[in-house]
Length: 619
Image (spheres, rainbow, N blue to C red):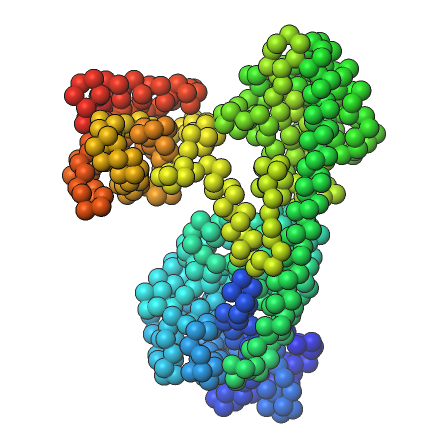
């Protein structure tokens, strides 16, 4: 976004950097930062250009700061630049105080300014609320992490927001995100350019979005120049967009100059049309894949497992997007050979990418344990790199029973190189007959529809805790991760005592209210982003504590038990008192299925119930 000019020529023409600083011979340009979902300009990034004292020609900020650095005047130039930007922003701020100013700070001088309060005083001078200021820190220039942390902590306490700039470049350090805990993460142009054609860029961008969502930060994509780039940014979850697609940097002194709603509306409509088209295309693709898998199974059910190889070979030869196919037994052990065709897809033959053989254990693969753990009939993975071919694929796994009345799992890998987004949609839209009407809906509404679909699959509709399906899918993974990280995992089985009396005395609506209140109390006493609670059935609940030993499990169970006992649950002005019984169990090491882990806790719960209830048993 810098003016095109010869830097060496500029340097020769700067006769007096001190004069530029002293007389503030600088021009302020602003570039809008746009929230498409809110259909508004959320903020402005302030950008500085210098004026040559001899020729009145524009000087790029890169040249200005290079010359100032040589003269030992970086701090002085940084301060006068900020002052000019804040002054220019004040005209807009006092017309509309809901806009943000993204203010660049030269990170190389952090250790010299962290305790000066100079920036705070600059903002106060123009009567601007610090909450409207986002301090942008370019982490490629940070030399002192301790000073960076002190600086950001200090200014955040004063009300300023903090953004990490140019995340995703070669010098970007992910540990800075953990250190600074930014309010905003700005993704560098290098990740944005032509992102619609680069699956790996999309993967990195999506990972940064997921990270930002977990830590409560917003994502801004910088350098967006085309509608195609903007659509992909929105699809991948980017929150705001900045770049020439909306506006180049320019002088702005009135709020009316920010009105670019026509472009926002146009992008919103284009995104809706794009999503609608992709979903329709995906439905057709989903039908085709289901037909292929079902045709395979129709043939496999007719034969014994010794004939699986021949049947697979007969059917999949004509289906060009199939990478390979193979059959597992119900325990995840491969029974057939991996059937694939070397003349159809490029195969990376080496020590990493090769076909799995008969007897290979697939029980920890992403296409096996969610299928079995969640008691599903069919499962579709997210796109991943096939270890059989080295190509990008998805796996559709489906259970069937053959003529020997034995249960098997057919796994079919489909090549996704030609249409990666279609397969991502398939993962999100798991109900074949689900109808989505997204015509005329905003970007936010479309995202809400998809998120609602995903949430409803694993959530108990009454209590808003997770459901039994989630237990089977999640707990299996948690046990594996705990063993892999050599950490304990604890589960707590809970049963509300004499709950039938609540329903009989106060009515089932009152009983439903009690269940909801119990979940609220339980959630309050466990770690929000680490532990989880699910409704096991009726008035029974399962609580899972990660990296928690027996002592912690017993303590948490007792805290919840006491809180339930003391709770004043009011339904229609009628107080209802309840108690609960708890059984805990901790898996410290070794292997165990999730059913076995739950069974141990359930046995302890039974002891608690048969010994007077309203107590915790941990054996």
